[in-house]
Image 1 (cartoon, rainbow over the protein chains, first blue to last red):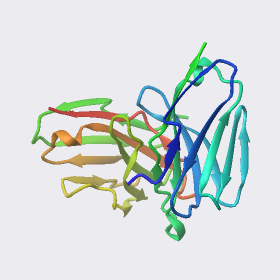
Image 2 (spheres, rainbow over the protein chains, first blue to last red; image 1 turned 90 degrees about the horizontal axis):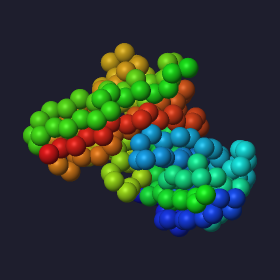
Image 3 (cartoon, chains in turn yellow, purple; image 1 turned 90 degrees about the vertical axis):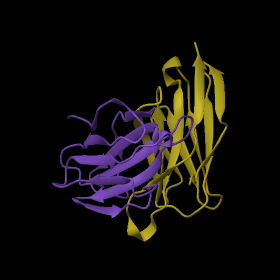
Image 4 (tube, rainbow over the protein chains, first blue to last red; image 1 turned 45 degrees about the horizontal axis):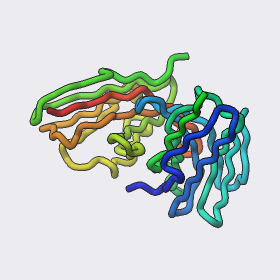
Length: 114
Length: 114
């Protein structure tokens, strides 16, 4: 079953603009991760945020986590055509069993127009 | 160093046949995961290995699916009596330990059942 709900499903912006994607989930989590996928193949890990963290940055990426609202957002600043891809949030809701099992959302398809 | 590799990259088979999909994790990673991704969806968890043992196989859809990791490194996902609904991209990921670690994904095997 899919835990994450991502919003929007699709996003089209001009190069240089910022892109914001949102993810909501249903159960308590150990951590939340964001991945990028090009052409429906391998996923590239972008950033991991733990349940006790509220914000993380990595280059042009900024991720926030609000555990009270069970939601996260991914902001990509100064977007580039190369950022065109599908973006997925994934939650580790394995609790104390610590299996690392990830539950993915359905993804946001981002198109950045040059 | 080398990332996660998966073979074959593409597999076309006929309904009812048996297939094996192979995953070579990053050297030294003890945790290994299999996911399945259908078109337009996020990946869905299948099974998790910690070392040689399957610590969580709750995502395997039925008893036609089986996976092994006999020496704690390479893993093989086996599907018996394939059905058209098994067509998907099968993704493998590994991480240094489990839970709070980043999962590194391979490029996937695209399985098509005719």
